[in-house]
Image (cartoon, rainbow, N blue to C red; front, side, top):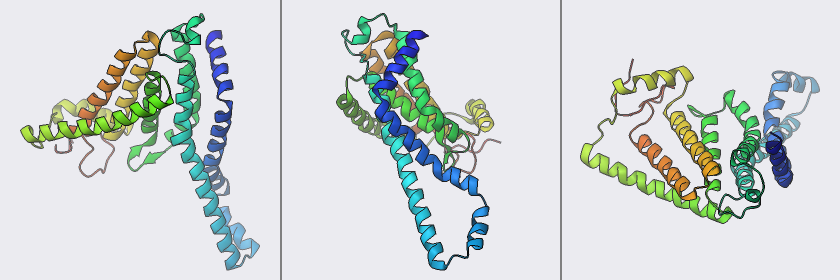
Length: 285
């Protein structure tokens, strides 16, 4: 483990500037929640005791809204821009392309390098996962599976690209390619089969039961599938350094889960958290 922790320290030292900014974004993002929790219902009583005028109350409310918006923007910047940049940089810091990277000329096993990078990404994600696991949602969807799948995709793509430019180019290509692929398959299926169900309710009964137990809906299930698939790509690339095969696995994950998404969906009324694999099928009791 000495090699792992030494590599982890090196990565944190190289990314210390971005890490400091990341911590600032986390603190600012947590401020509104912490303030609301601390003040609770005592805020209104405190304002009444101060005998503030309507203008002062309005100015205070505007100030609170401005602070909240600033903190929310900092949190969004950290989660959706700074975090992917940090993950990409830490993976590209020790390139997996070719055979001349510095770490490959040293006695650092691939498994140790994989563990060090995974720990670094895990440390970044831990505060978000803890916060989101306590109720973070987007509508009826859990937020943490989507966030974890997003970061897994970023890390997997970084592991099969030599630099930031290639990472950005591949990402755009895969994004548009997936949309075109999904639209084509959907048109073909509807042309030959119409809106018929791909899977029967009897086949999906175990999956629906698991979804009810974990309070997951179909969207959460797809995100977990993406998370698992991209994690396999990431691990495979570090252990084998077979970039072409890892690239093929990445495309296969996008295609497989994309097909599953097209043949599936949440319940028609979106009124529960039970996994529903085909939106045209009837509700299972």
